[in-house]
Length: 284
Image (tube, rainbow, N blue to C red; front, side, top):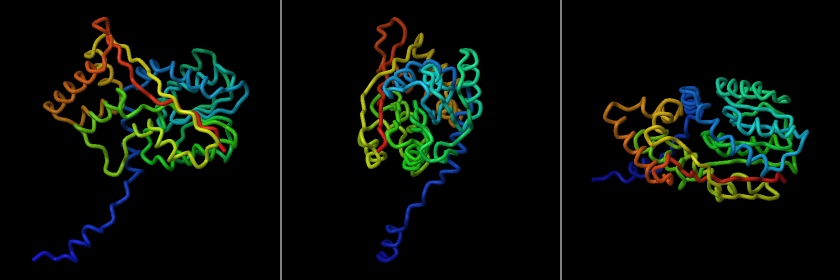
């Protein structure tokens, strides 16, 4: 006979909250592996476009969160803003410093910081930026709360986030098929949905503008892109490292097949349009 009371108790047992600290430790190790800057620098045009969308003005105080190797940071500095560039991976900040020095850009403060616990006072910045960065933090409500807290009333929060149906969103899905993500953590690609942005920021926003755009990855071939991503892109590098030889072969085959599905290069080099959502939120 089934013990209904026991079954009910099991069904009603609370689901344990994700261990965000442990998840971030693993994420930090993944992003510190390889050399993301090799890929990150190819995305510079997105940082430029985002600064234009945010309508940055000279002299404004700008915070770039989860800045990586500094695409939005450098774009804001080129517009004579006073920029604070943050990331929780020191090696990525160092790449940003190297780039700023090479371009003789001034007015940039590079600072190690976690987007879920920003070490800044309330309303410290005129604009808060993120290009494919904060979307990877494991606790989205906390991320949104921190970005809103440090942005002054009337200021802007501007983000570029990959969408679920776009190429990189599908890459995340592909990785999850081979290496399941931590339990309780939502897909970073959900940051590329209007509904998710409204959920996270709508209550504190005077205005939200969102436009779908495309960044085009350009490589010699699918095999070339696989080589670069496998060697330098932390999440891909770590996914391969977690698999045995057979699993690595299967992941490589799936990645190449995905690239070929999105490719519009017509045998003249690999060209993959990857959809992202460009968001500008005016803080209430």
